Length: 187
Image (cartoon, rainbow, N blue to C red; front, top):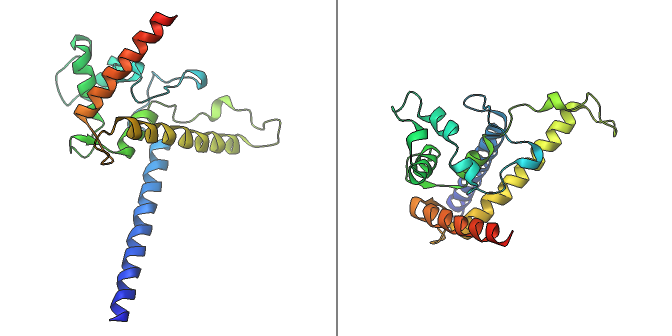
């Protein structure tokens, strides 16, 4: 009996290690690859600060790119609600009608430039190579966007199940629209 408990513990540890490795691989893959180069990337000071950023959620070019070859739809003819629905649906990679943390992470990060080494000098003033500087930037971006994902799930995941349903997403978008409206009135 003691042996079977030990074997079961080893199996769980192995499964946990495999799951953690797969998660890490997915995170790094999402930071280094893209389904195609995007022309609508954001600069360092202009990158989206939240999952509900209307610049991203209602980006017609981005949605058209995803719909190309899948459906004969034109994002320029869609309502705001239709754009938001397609944005949500296009990032639900496993088609379970919910977004998990990795899907939210990918939705936020795939608009980033694929390779930003071009704007880094070969050696920075601290003596680091362009590759080292780029690696540091990517690590900082992972932390930055992981924090956003954590905040999205903390604020928007009403039933606290670790997933964002479409209903939760819509409620969060409306809340964000109200916040934006209040901010614009305060200015």
